Length: 115
Length: 114
Image (cartoon, rainbow over all chains, first blue to last red; front, side, top):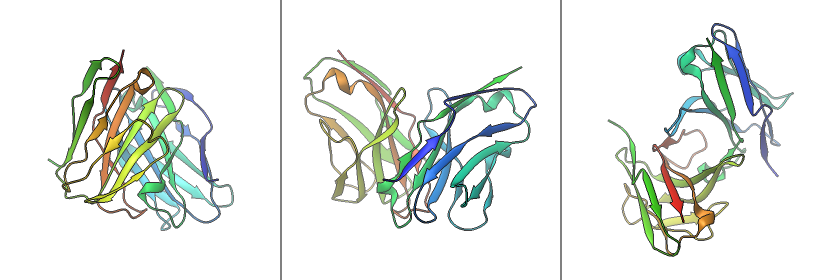
């Protein structure tokens, strides 16, 4: 079965330091991959997506992610954390050949940013 | 402004009392879906709709109903709510069913069933 694993349920960084949120997926072929962010009392907002174009994907608010097929990973990074980045982040996979009805969510990673 | 609107945002009710959570999008999106979010379980899909009059079960459809009579609206119906349906619910939509489309989410509805 297809799956997506977010390797950390909670990540804590200091403001101004790099952010790394890890995501691994299982899929026979290249899937569609997304990162969403959820701020408190809000719905999910798209950060970035990979759909078999460039393997390094740039998103909003300085975030980017690299699709590594050999490692089946799609880790989310940001060079310098800001207090406003504190939120929960979800890695989402749509398996190759699937549609929106086949969305698979990771369990989420809560990012805390210390002053 | 492009948005997905859910109502109500918060509701406390009792077991067995039918309720409906409305969802409306103003982006002319074909695809709409409902999710529930529970601690430690992430988001799970309840029902989805590829277009008007076309609905399908997601991963956790038991105890829920939906309808898609118009393109913009996709209400979630709990005919006889039970405490295990206490959760945070999200409606989402996307332009088409294609896998390269992002989903746009509403701000959520927090349901408490006593």
